[in-house]
Length: 361
Image (cartoon, rainbow, N blue to C red; front, side, top):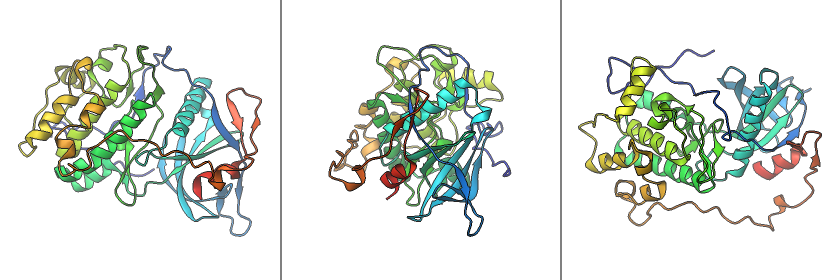
């Protein structure tokens, strides 16, 4: 286990908030209704040539992350040499509810195709283990970047935040809410582009139907979550994005506390300090995000037109992302994938190599 990393300082630097891990209440209702996941079964193996660990055609290189029931390995797809991240989940440690939540995460990630969202290439399953083969973001977490380099200049923060807003608005237009947006879940690729990760608390929403699960990290949580109120979905992501914008520009969190009770009180007051170096335009944008009344929080379509968002991008105003139409003549989309129905109605078992070829070539 690697040594703990220093936390981001908050605005009250004498009372630093520790790095927060996502948490969720066991308050489940119509909010949690996972459906089927597309899963391929393939046995873990070792190379006879050099005894290096392999998962199918992926050669495992090193561990790059660990959790209670999972770890993440850097791996290489042997036929192409492409690096991927493989999340290895011990299914035996998950109860049926946890497995259903995992299947929902997989299904949602397979719905998403945006340049600033980590792509899920393939899911490989053995009797005891689930392997999620994902895009590898070699630049690491934005959290670590801020710890190492301090706050971003507004020009750099704007470039990153435009990508973040674009990807979250894309999710919202597909009726998906992330619910765990924070600096730790924003990754950077080799070109320092944003890749949003960890859809473990994501869910689909239907306008007019309320969700009721408290998800995410407390310093990024909207006030209505602390109050135990039901919510539509997108507005809780909008609040979290306001916290992220503040964090990028200041290198600190807008709300803090010595304990959860104190943090809750400060979030519910909605008061935060504006650093002297923050521009008026940035301050005005924050006021559209960090609004106590969720009904008065701006939509991301409105945020995209904000002045600060488009400074130096006047000829490229941020607009909702449109997925390119699939090329039905692409030879990689043609052919028998070898799918068959599985015994469980929630699982589709497909030929693993077909998925590898489709996503990695």
